[in-house]
Image 1 (cartoon, rainbow, N blue to C red):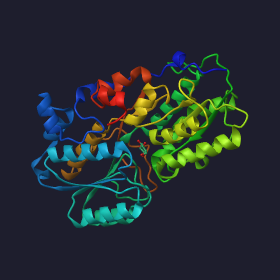
Image 2: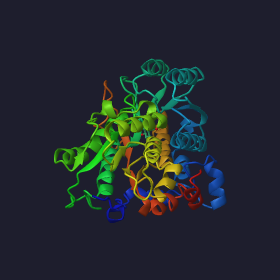
Image 3: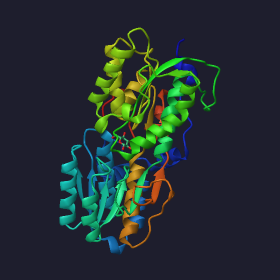
Image 4: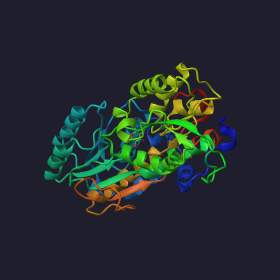
Length: 398
Ligand code: BGC
C-alpha cells in the first residue's frame, strides 16, 4: 500500500486561536527584540502590550519576578523566556530570566537565588516536575507566588496557578495527524475505507515532564482503536509510554532509538509512520530514517510539536508531515496576567479547574488552544500570524 499524503492533507482547520494570533502580530518565535521596538516600527500596539499596559497596577510597580526556563537547546523555551520577560518589563516589573541547561540542580539553584533576591512572583517551566518542592516551600514561606509555566509542578501545595496549552488536545492532534497522513481518517477526522495495515512506532517525551503523559494519552486515545482493529501495527510491540519515552526530550536519544528499532524490527518491512511528541525528537527520527534510505517524498508520516523553524522547513520539503503550533506569545501573556492578578491579591482567571491534579491539589489553570500545521497551512498559521517570516520558513533558519 502507498501513503498518499496529498489526498489526506492536514486538518487545516484553524481554531479560534488563529484569529487571536492574527491580531497579535509582531514577534516571531526566534526573535528576541523588545515588543516596544517592533510595535513602534510597525506603528501598532501588540495584544501583549495592550494587556500588559491595561493590567499594570500601582501595586505591581517595581516588583521583581523570577522567570525560570528549562533549556536553551530548544527554540520554544528561548522564545517563551524572551516573551515573558519583555511583557513583564512592559508591565513595570524587574525580571530575572534564567535558563537551566536541562540540569535539575542548576534550576533549583537558580530558583533559590531568585528567592534570595526578593522575587515576588516565580514563573517556572520545570525540567523535572517533581523536583522543585523544596524551592516552592521556601518561596511560599516568603509569601512568593508561584506560576507553573507550561509544565505542571507536581507534589507541592504551593503552585498558585498553571498556564499551558490543552495538553491532552495536543496529543489528540498529534495522533489524528498521524492517522490523516496515513489516510486512515479524512480531513474531518472521519474514518476512511483505507484498511492498512500500516507499520508505525511511537515516541513520547520525558517521563518527568507531566505534559509528556497528557500528550501520549491524548495521542493513544485516537491511535489505540486502530491498533486494536489491526489497521495499525507496532512491529516493536513498544506501546507503553515507558517504552516510548525519550529522557529530557533529547534529539540524539530519539535518533538512537529509531536506529535500534529499524535494525531490530524492520529488516524485512517498511515503516509507514512515527508518532513523535516534539519537533526535536522528529528531527532525530528523520535522520535515522534517512540514514536507512527513506527520502522525500516517500518518507514515513512523522508528526511533531512546537513549529520549530528547522522542522517547518522539513514540512515544506515533504520530509516531516506535521507539527503542532503553540503560540508562546499568547502563553507569555497569560503568565503575565496571572502574575499581576496574584500580586494584586486576586485569583487569576482560569478556564480549567479540574484537570491538573498535581499529587497534592488541583491547580487552577488557563489553557490555550493549539493548531495542527501541515504543508497546507504553514503560511496561514505561522507566517500570516507573524510567528515566522516567509524568509525564515524558506531558509529554515530563525
Ligand atoms: C512542552 C512542549 C515541548 C516539550 C519539549 C513540553 O513540556 O509542552 O511544547 O515540545 O516540552 O521541550
